[in-house]
Image (cartoon, rainbow, N blue to C red):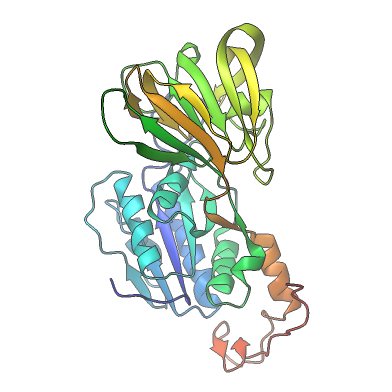
Length: 359
């Protein structure tokens, strides 16, 4: 794919987000295709309203993107990658948008989807909209507002350096005994070792199998594995460092919601705050769960090195972006007839004010 340029917005959707087995075994509902299509359509409309040159959309086996922009007036392109029906589609879409030099990306999904985007594009300028099962990393943002904010950043009307906050991640290195080489991986919220032999449905259902959790975001209001660290040692997303929780007898007992509407009692052996970029060695023997989903078997004898790094996606502050645009009069209009296109002096034909960014 040839470069598109920074004056373009990307939209990535995970059609499977919010539909896994946890939706059947807990009190949570599903995020339907119709809901995702509606959000994507509003994102695209918001971006086009601000006069963005082009919108690049991920493709998927459910054809959500094509359905979302059907009938909309704008320049839309679709990522051309082989579809697998797996997380690799999200990884590939993010990598393709990075290569195409997209100026900002709006992602629909949960923690796992955002992690997949960061795998394909590590420091993507990102607005993450919650449509998944675990939603610690993304947040609830109106699609129209997200599209407008993404367009403002992508066009350069608002600087990504001002409104983009570099997020943290849990960086992991796996050293398997009797096997050369090191495997590197990461999580955007937490990584945990689950004492089981199977990846299975990916969800973490049995609290007794959780051995340790390393979290860079520990929100006490969250559910799932992230709630363990959140209810023991809260860590804000903008706070440096993280925390290591070892599970086992001999310490405190804590009640946590491992799934919406479902609580469990866990034995917490120890709590260790982790300073930024400080490595800790942890044992293997089970399956690693990244951001609440079991994905990587690690045999006994594997040494896992974990640290909290400030090298994740650049989360865009939507409220700040729109506030700067309002002060710069980016939403004013002197046009007759159709609104929402770039004039000769900026969006809507109004010269932007240059003296109030404070950057």
